Amino acid sequence: MLARHSYSVTALGLVLAVATPAQNKPAEGKPPVPFAEFAADFRTHHDLATEAKTSFADLLDQRYLRARIGNLLIHVPPHELAERRHREAVRDALSALIKLQAEWVRWFAADEAAEPALKAADRLGKWADREALRTLAASAARKTIDAAALDLLGADDEVRAAAATLADAVTTGVALGLEPSNNPAVARLVLAPTRRHFLEVCAFLGSIEPANRASFWHPTVPERAQTWIHSPFEFQLVALEYADPQRPPDDYVGAMSMSSKEATGLLQHVAERGAASLLQHTFGGDLDASFVTGLAQNLVIAIYGENNARSGGDVRGRSAASYGGFVAGGRSEGGMLAGINLESRWRTKKGSDYFVRELRRGLRDASKKRRGRDARPGAVALYSDDRSQGEVVDGPFLRGTAAAAIPAACTNDYLEFMRAYRSGFVHWLRDAAAGRSTKSRTQFGKLLRQLLAAPASGLDAACEQVYGLPLSGDGPKPDNLEWRFLRWLSRSTG
Image (cartoon, rainbow, N blue to C red; front, side):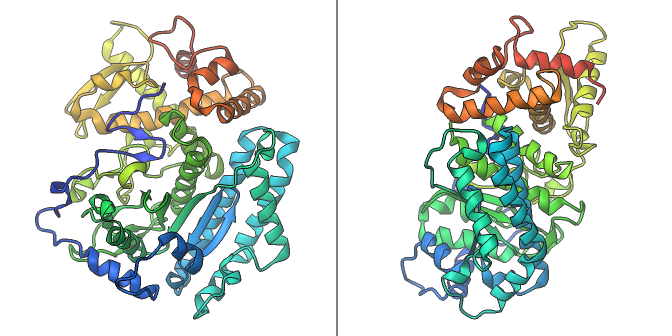
């Protein structure tokens, strides 16, 4: 099984320990975040009585715009859409999630069975490109919105039919090449067009569920770009703006565009967060975390040709000292720090080749440092931030056994290496494990269906079933998939 380290990556983001009361104290020199005031502002924006017991699920269903995209149910706050730039961000986010759902269907390689779903997704994509902005503007202009008008995809008969076709095809499993079944559950995402809305939602949930406060009244909440919430029900809150790293200490809602560094920055972020929700919904908590993270990362690359999103590696950025390091995050209690462009050596091509070039260089670097001593393949050289410390660490890596050998100073480089490694492994498994790409993708589709059929059995059992090999092993003998990947990596020129 793939390891789930305390500081490593879970299926859906960076996860560390639950925040303690001591950790809830603001950093020295920073004023405490006025969460109670932000919670009161949330109630004001939604016309909620101050002392009323409020169901957030009911609030989403009755006050938020929604769009059902396959297995995903997207919620959007209409009162945050007054500015065109925020409407454009939501439009782009919806487009990214539509493309994500279609790409996920393609990965099952179900061919003819997938065609109706893909045609429906194509129609929804055209709606997002041509009509969504106008629909969002109309919603923002209304003082009150009736129940029917909350459905962003409901006004046009053709669009509504396409949404229903896609939802039915993926929830029954038909589009994935599975025997039809009935799974009406959806994965919920709440989009936060503004930093204020992101902070207000966290503050409000902390006000109605005191158990949430350890994480959602945490002083790092104003820096986060996403967070998972489990009470009163499970959903992912996804910011569409980064926190401005240059804002004053008492400015909790200053924003920076997610596309200020990269043209598709927002799209990559939303697609990866959507993939996280989609995969959690599809596999639950049963499937190996590192494999699921690799799937999410590579879905983004398949759509946009690169993935430089913040999840999965060292989330601090190169100016991270101002943020005070890691925060409680991941599925359990928190989220990712907001991003500053990462200047990681593992991201020089931003994943456009699934990090193959960087991985090859890392392996070659280790070989040079050993200068022929212990020529065992599959070692990588890792470094501290300032490169003053380094360590050559032997694989295998997928099972996490190498983590024990990582010096603390090299942890951040290790996180970035593992982000690249998971992506490279999933890429090899899907595109090269069986030799030709077509055959490899057919086998990979079988693997995904096998995992859906018996997720509790785990990735090892599914790999044995589909490839006739275990996922990994302590060495190249007996034969296993990870060591085949390492051999391929050492020979590859990509």
